[in-house]
Image (cartoon, rainbow, N blue to C red; front, side):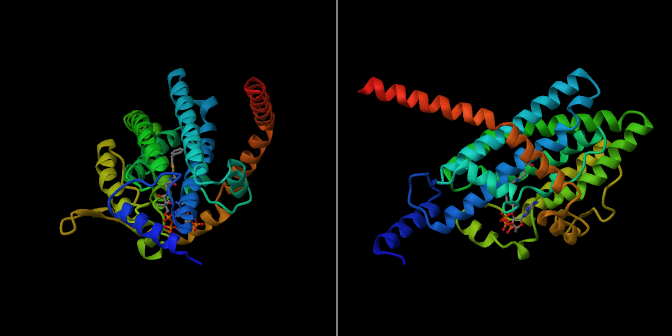
Amino acid sequence: MQTVNDAEEQLKFDQRIIDEQKIEPTDWMPDDYRKNLIRQMSQHAHSEVIGMQPEGNWITRAPTLRRKAVLLSKVQDEGGHGLYLYSATESLGITRSKLIELLQTGVAKYASIFNYPTLTWADMGAIGWLVDGAAIVNQISLQRTSYGPYARAMIRICKEESFHQRQGYEIMTVLAKGSVEQKEMAQDAMNRNWWPSLMMFGPHDSDSAHSGKSMKWKIKRQSNDYLRQKFIDQTVPQIEALGLEMPDPELKWNEDRGHYDSGEINWEEFYQVINGSGPCNYQRLKHHKKAHKDGEWVRTAVRAYQEKQTAKNQTNVA
Ligand code: FAQ
């Protein structure tokens, strides 16, 4: 039941959202706002961490030392993004171990794109270019999200994603201008990653369960379809510059709309993947569970160190 105090706090909260002021961890916030943020931010963190796996598979097989160093650094960056986002989510009053439990039991989702396999080196180009490219379009918008710690994490993350996008495009450029086999490999990787990249923006606005509230609270600043269109419009000229065939025959400039038209996403596939039945869902979670278990000794050591430091500080105070 809402008390008089809650009603007053609600009014103040609503006004702060209207005034574009950030909501900070110690501020009063409606329960649904908190829950919705925990849901979206934790799924974002999980996506960054699970997203290390498809590219991590290629670190040992990168074609040159330079490519290996760049890929290693990119994959580490994604892990770092996950850590900022977990910390920002914890500021809402939920523990990291609970968030991991929700991921590992299949309650919390992560971006569907990471449930597809990376079959050739060209996937490293296509992921950097298309997946990081799609992530940036979404995350630039989230830099203005209403929750302070999330908005600030996004500013730093976007800078790094921008480098990731460029290194992916550079891999694609080299392959597309290389031998016939290399060009075919680039085309195939783009074709396979195109539709899953469009799926990253979520269902159509009319089918998006959370958009109404998230837009009202300015957690989301632009809709799923708006951002997807923006990504398509900026990416088609890049495909032309690479000299590759369009991955969707319906991609055509529409003079009246001032945007590219495109074919329809296979939504049946999207729902299958987000509900756990994509090509690599089982493998991704299995690997996460093993890595988490293998890292238990690190968490135990950190806890022991923290306890020792606390005891030492208490002795010093006494
Ligand atoms: N995959 O009502 P909506 C990256 C779920 S970071 C899986 O529209 P919302 C960096 C959605 O969670 C990529 N699930 O939901 C990188 C909800 O399910 P729920 C991650 C999806 O939240 C690059 C249900 O469908 N980025 O790539 C997907 O308003 C390379 C209904 O959907 C973010 O997370 C999907 N594609 O809008 C790392 C950005 N789409 O929770 C490594 C932040 C929808 O009720 C390598 N997130 N669902 O069980 C967002 O902007 C939003 O959460 C959306 C979805 C736009 C993803």
